[in-house]
Length: 340
Image 1 (tube, rainbow, N blue to C red):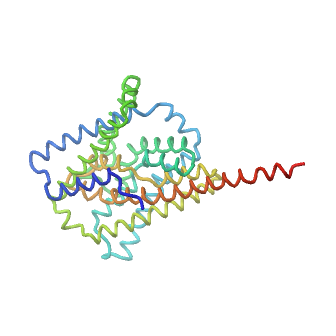
Image 2 (cartoon, rainbow, N blue to C red):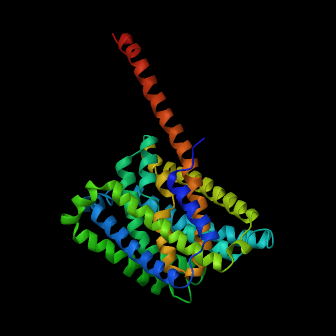
Image 3 (cartoon, rainbow, N blue to C red):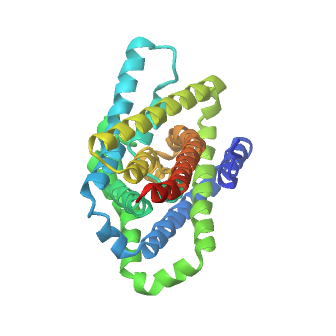
């Protein structure tokens, strides 16, 4: 059984600390400024790290790249809206409230992950270069599409913000640092690539601080009186259902487009992922501080479910690829013997 990764354990520790020792008053304001600075640096480093040729290469296989974007920014939101309408019509009082539903719908609007999509595609013996391109484009597109889709899907965003205002806010706090990193890539890029561990620590550390700050505000507002253990289980089941459905539909989409097995693997893993690294900072920009904690709960649960499920699936694909290769090696002498 796959163990919980250290990053997830750190997030759980941040939630526990916020539950017992939430930051308040002046400390909360200070941490919110720290969060803004950390997020700015995180996206600046992402821009400095991403080589431009990866962006250019990403548009070459338009069928695969378009399919990943379709899964991420069309299939998921439609699925979320459909499930919300269905459960509200059939089980009006059986599931959690609108705040957690907002978190589910926000999750559906997020871009794909980068690191785990690439790693899992590699384990599954899929098309790794295509996965790199697809995950990269998804994250860049998500800076604009996620706040826009969130506004459309939820009907409103944050404290009375319009979707356009949210796009501008996200662009100012996330896209501008990313673009500056791209501009300074010639000088900063080599430094960032030489210190990958430090940059990874900075990325994950900023998310942990965001989660602690968000859950502190949520605890002060009484999150644990509004969200029970049964609600968390319901969210986990709904997250699992959505992941399973998108994995099946993305596989069928790859078949329908006549994609190779390697491309179908890349489509499945890139199209079914949702980025915690992008989602938490975006939530802190789009939603009021008191709502962020409960909004990101479904995303945090989905994050662990997708890692566990897709790791098992990737290993199965990888073993099948090795078995096929071994069978081909075993039968090749027979073919040579039978040839006159």
